[in-house]
Amino acid sequence: MDRLQDIKSYAASLGLVHTKNELEELIHEAENAEAGYATFLCEVLGSEIRYRQNKARERRIKEAGFPYKKYLKDFDLSFCQSITKKQLNQLSELTWIDGIYNLILSGPPGVGKTHLAIALAFHACEEGYKVSYTTMQSLMQVLRTQEIDRRSRAKMNRIRKSNLLVVDEVGYLPITATEGNLFFQLISELQEQTSIIITTNKGFEEWAEFLDDVALATAILDRLSYRCDRIQMSGKSYRLENRKSFLQKGAERNEIS
Ligand code: ADP
Ligand code: MG
Image (cartoon, rainbow, N blue to C red; front, side):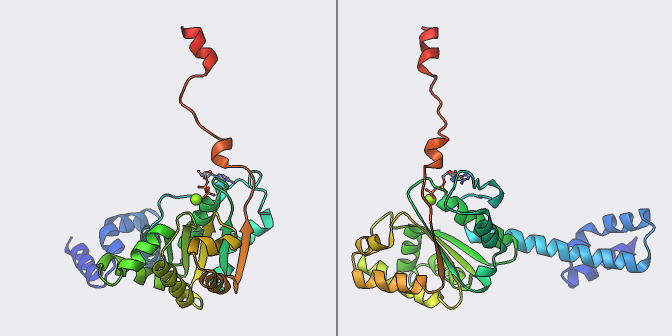
């Protein structure tokens, strides 16, 4: 039927990708449901919008650059005693991103800093916020090379346009004076426009040490802390508590031999 072809080419001209690709199915469903004209048109336009929103959501998640996915629903509050259910609910509501607040998650390895940071950032992506994830190490590399490397420049442009930036693993590796200054410039630049989640294994008093500069550490922490909540995550390492092993137990080995 060339009507269908006409509709498809109109849809293509209007950029209605979903309508073009699913036209037969949409018509088939409307016929089965004996839908009226208004219902049918509403369904066509509605499904096009849902398709676009899904696509945009997937793109936001892909471009955020998560190393893996973590979810808020899997974050076990009975294991992590440093956050109350009420606080986690407040964080999940994401109004702090609208208010451009920062969040510093500090504590030793394995207590769930990265899990919580990624889960919040992933949730923000789903809710329509633009998010960028990076480790401190990779951020330093990108900042150093943004003038000469197109990919670094693209990454920095994305960071600058994000509603939320996650900088994971701050303080694990020492950084040079130049890198420290570039980091300070970035934090200053983002302070009125982007929320930042920092995860760190260092207490504030140790920042001077890994930055090797007291004045710079004070300046960075001053900027970050202005509108900020800090969660000191303590306790046991989830990794060590839930260690998975592959070797057979000693007793079983004795039984075999
Ligand atoms: P950190 O970044 O503090 O070193 P991670 O967030 O990487 O620790 O956590 C280590 C592992 O333990 C991850 O697989 C994470 O999903 C898990 N984990 C840590 N804390 C929790 C928690 N409270 N509930 C569920 N899983 C957790
Ligand atoms: Mg981590």
